[in-house]
Amino acid sequence: MANFYSPQTYGELNEGISQVLFSEEDIQNRVLELGQAISRDYEGCRPLLVGVLKGVFPFMSDLLRAITIPVEVDFMAIASYSAEARDKGYVRLQKDLDESIAGRHVLFVEDVVDTGLTLNYLLGNLRARGPASIKVCALFNKGRRRLISVPLQYKGFDLPDKFVVGYGLDYRELYRNLPFVGLLKPQVFSPGR
Ligand code: 5GP
Image (cartoon, rainbow, N blue to C red; front, side):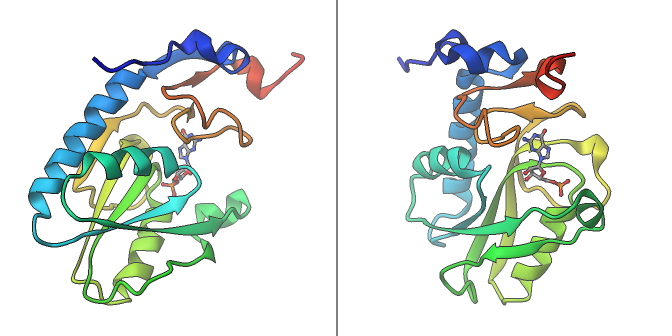
């Protein structure tokens, strides 16, 4: 049987959490199911998993190991713009992929899809490079906040319209190391109040 960390192990970080939405066990079980589905669907295709740093790295790492067929992985990084620029869907590539994706079966792996603007921009950018196919696997989906329709062929969980941290998702660069996903206490956002 798998061993899971107790949230209390994370002392100070866990004290900032008001509610655990998805436990480590919930996440690991779902990632295993996603890996099995992808292994079935991409048999004989040698897919290329593409992720955007940094938030996706724990999910990518677990998903990669849950996939049982030959698979490759590559990463991009994007710069964070002002809130206004992001609202318009502007994204600047800070690190591009190492390899060409022309003729490849690309599976784009995302941590959270919120408005869909980032994903929409990146999918357009990747489609222009001539992949054989391109699909999306997102661990979390915030459907209510969607501004633009984006196809999610593989989806882990639906999230409420709330800011979450853990399992790669940060608040001011912290909380990425939590193996579960939860909500932050209000005082974390406004210390001293
Ligand atoms: P979108 O362009 O879909 O609005 O933004 C997606 C990106 O916003 C995600 O890849 C993630 O970096 C960030 N994001 C969206 N919701 C959350 C959240 O609840 N928590 C954290 N930490 N990041 C989020």
